[in-house]
Length: 204
Image (cartoon, rainbow, N blue to C red; front, side, top):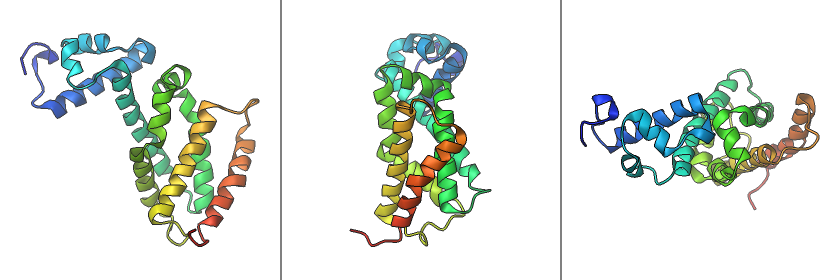
């Protein structure tokens, strides 16, 4: 890679270049907002050309989707920290799902993706195998004994997918009128409770 741009310090390999582009995109989102963050703006911030970014991201949507993946990682980490004070599996899942439903729409990058034609990108990101795997790992790293609740193997994946799809639908198409925090948690417990009880049953 040439030495022009990149603040005079070019990346040593493609992995570093991709990481620096993503960090620049996230900084642009914080400064300009997602709507005004484009490949052109990110390239200008880095002092590189658009073709350089095209080597790693084919479009602005692709770049924002990768940035959203990082944002989702951060949210997963926040949920993981909640488990420190909640040891009952159902209590934890109700609170975690409620937290995401309440907070995700107010996260700048993800909120914009929900409000525009980028909704489809966000929808896929939330339930793709990588999201299921990441969320499952987060759950399994808590103190909750999922195996004793009947969840392991493909059944654990099914539980995670069920929860992600619940979050997805309620964030993208929220109820009207919206539920207050107490009503939301009562509603979630009504459906998550039976799902947890089903874990103790035989696999069909």
